[in-house]
Length: 127
Image (cartoon, rainbow, N blue to C red; front, side, top):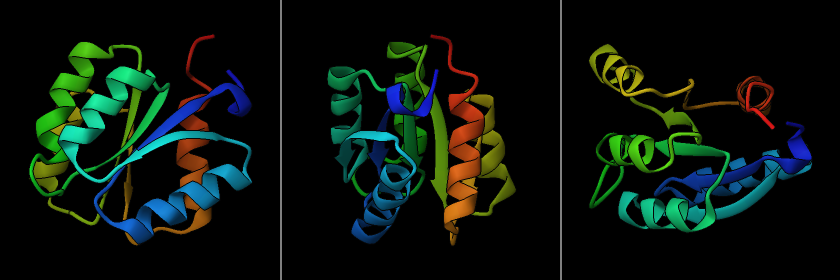
């Protein structure tokens, strides 16, 4: 799958983080099809929009990324998930890795880290 056909959903409660991710991804030709500010809304959007890739924050109000991740994996088994987090706690990272994420990006990040992580996942998505 090439980047122009990859549909990406951003789920992060931080407006600035979502904006930076959106700008970086769109500047590289990716299709950001939606954005959500919490896990509950993000899960609803994922079911509705059927993204190829979800960039999911771990710590969010209401429902965290770690709480909706199993539901995403269950309901959207073909979707790829990259966790985006400032949480460097190894236990949390191990927990989400076991749930089936396809990578993670630590905050603070730069554009190249985002591009590299997303590109690595998108190239593995089957057509």
